[in-house]
Image (cartoon, rainbow, N blue to C red; front, side):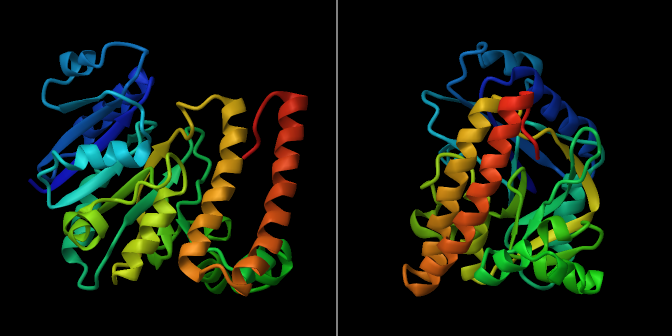
Length: 295
């Protein structure tokens, strides 16, 4: 088996079905298996997935213990050379999975996590390739005239994220976990031979990419194939605000792992928390006034 595609479902039956159908309709050039982990959904009987897609492997988790643990549960049944963690709120419009596998097979340099170009359903661009946070990055993001005065290629490689139009393939620090492919053999080099489960939700992709890179497997962003990512399809808007705060906490945990808890960490907190809490206040105000969450 070339690739094991693991999808986590939590109360999004139709959206998850759309994701599975898109994989079946577009993935033609490789052999693959789909492993669906239902995280104790209450919306409907998970056996309905098997009725609709008899070829998938269904795992019924008896509790919703998060994204990381759900994926590790799916990985226990995986037989593929490569693992693809695919969000249930994504759908393919081309054979992105085969293109990603071919990239691994044809690239001589090591690759850890591989991500692809992503857009919202309205075709708005998502920032799928990122840099690890640093004091310099945060300051440049605050003083945007500095990176914006640089030539585009230099700015994109230095800053990634919203400063990168996702218009060229490149190594990067980390990739969005909605499409997260990696060689299964990496797991043998990790503690307990599985993905780190410390985060219930959000920030896992960042953490895993850092841990892969520490083993000599850098992240890779692929620009020549695109998927659609609905984003937060299983999360109500008011809950998304709470999750922003959780994401901030997780970012600090990752920084502690990367840099330790010394002077650099505290200086980073000063800049990062000031910036992010200000942004949170703006999002919260807009939500209260207009009932929607701005990106």
